[in-house]
Length: 392
Picture 1 (cartoon, rainbow, N blue to C red):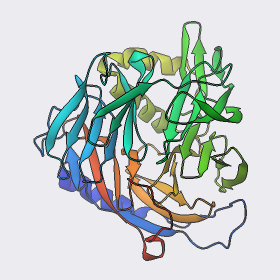
Picture 2: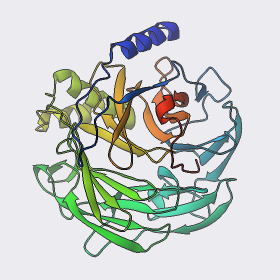
Picture 3: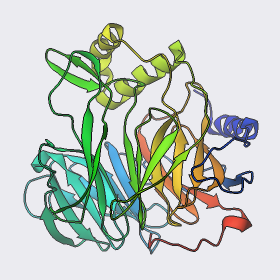
C-alpha cells in the first residue's frame, strides 16, 4: 500500500494535470468568459472515522453528512445508532437515533437531507419514513412522502433550504435485459403533499432478469437538485440539465458540448470493485457473474452527480474515469452561466458544499474503512461574494 505522503503527491500531481478550459454551450447564450478555477485544500482539514483520530470503528456504512452552523458535523450511518455528532475538529460528541421503529428511531438509513434549519433521515426500513430533527438533534416529527397517481414509490429526492423537495419515482413494471422507462418527477414540501407535477422523463437505466432488476453499471441514471427557486433534472442522455422554477415553469436548459467517452475494461473493473466494496467481499462471485451476463454501455454518461451549494449555484460532476485520482465539477449560476471548475478527489462522494468547504465520504485506502472528509474550499474573488446564500 502507498503511504499517505505518496498519495498526497499523486493527488497534487493529478491536480496540476487537469485542464481547466472547456467550451460551454448554455441556453440562453451569455457573454462567454473562461470559467474560474476554484480550489480545495490539498488534504482534508477534518477526517472522521480513521486511525488518525479517536473515531476509529464508530462508522459502519456512511450515507450522509451535514455541517451545522457551529462547525459540528452530523454523520448518517447504518450502525446501531444512525446519527452521530462530531465537533468542528472531528472529535466524537454523541450518537442518537438508535436502530428501531419507535419515535425518532431509524431501521435502515438510506440518506440524510439538510433542509435549512433542520435535517431529515430517509428510513426505508420503516416504510419509507422521514424523521425530522432540529439542528440540535431533537426529534420533531415523522411523515411519509406521497407520490402522484400511478407513481409506485420515491426513487430519489433532494431538498432546498425552504424545505421544498424534488423527487422522481421508480419505474412501473420491469423488463428483461437493458431497459429504461419514463417516470414521474414532482415537487413537495416537508410533508406528504404533492405540490407541483413536473412531468415524466427517462428514469433509471436498468438490467432486468426474470427475478428482478438493478441499475445498469455505467448506465444512465437521472439526477435531481433544487435551489432556492430553481429545480434541476438531469437524465444523463447528453450533457443537458433541465431547469424549472419551483412553481413548475420550464426555464432555459443548461447544456455543454461534450464528446461521448468510450467505456474501457478498466471502467468496467472499477464499477465491479465499487459494487463489491458496497455489498461486501462475499458478493464478489455473484457480482462477477452478473457483470459477465450483462450488456454494458459502450459510452459513459456525461455526468454522475448534481449538487446545489450554499451560494445557490449548481455543481455538476463529470463522470469519473477509472484510474483517475481526480474529477472535475463544473459550477453554474442559477441563471445558467458557467462560473467555475473545481477539481475534487474522484473517490469523494460529495454530500454538502458550503461557501468555504466541501463535505463528503471516502474509503480510507490504508484501513479500508469509511470516513467523512471535509476540505476547505477557496472561491476566486470574482465569485466569492454571491448574492444568494443558503443557511448551511
